[in-house]
Length: 384
Image (tube, rainbow, N blue to C red; front, side):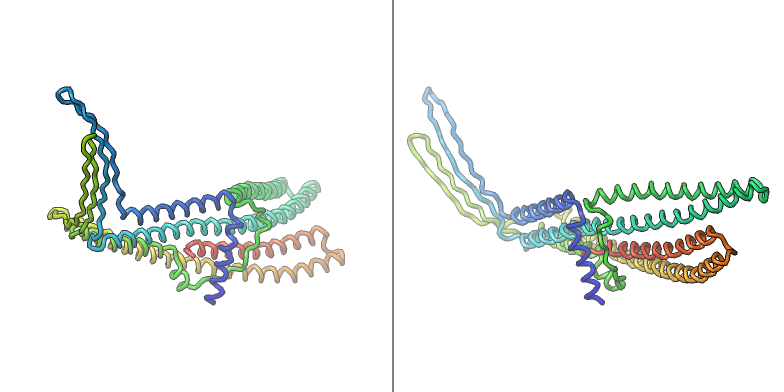
């Protein structure tokens, strides 16, 4: 079951690059390059730059002018900061991983949005088809009422109700078509494909264990790890550090040239009795708060999963009821067709019962699509 589950999400994601528009793929590519560059900058920032200077000055005294040229370089590098150097590199790596996960999560959500929109478009097409069948029935009813009214069998109110009913169905069809245009617009914002050409595999319903194990909230664990390391970083700010200082200089006044150089190690520490404990305590609170927020998010994700499962079970019941209703209409359709052959029922009676039976089949297909959409909503919460 787990292997099949991962094959499905792999299929969904690997085909995602083909689903998303070229512009979106370029955006994600640029965002990853940006994250890589930020990581390199953070890691290499522990290496201090070499300072180089060149000076040329002119000095006049007692009508005597002398030109002095000097140049040199200096380099100051922390070589020990009570573990802070390596922690800083670790934080940069974790930040890089977290940023990549955010990008991948964002990309996957867009891919799943494409699948959801395709399903929504399929569903709305079925809704339109269903309403068209109902409209056909309404028009038949309207014509029959009109004939009866002209013959004086019914009053104007019954005919009026039939006309209103037909108009209402037509309005529903137009509303659905407007909604379809909105969904198409959202789809074309994400993809350059024809939605009719996109194939969606049967999606397995993940278990709660898989859902929590592979949930987006696990990226919050990276942030907890960063904040925990920040506690050590904050402590190290007030612990001893050792720095290497290298200096070289050269002075030329036109008569004499001299140079100097020095290499030294310096040990130092910050003594700040007012800020030390406050800073450390603040970093601990930040880490604790992130952990509490993670636990709350985990609870919310479990509630979302359980709610989705309940919805899916309701759709299963609706699918079952629609099938049962359709089966009942099969018997009724056969009876009406037999009565029509014997001249007892009209051709319109056959059309109405066939259309009604068709709407029950369409309803079953609509519920199946709604179920698939609910499952995709679950997949949107994965970081895989």
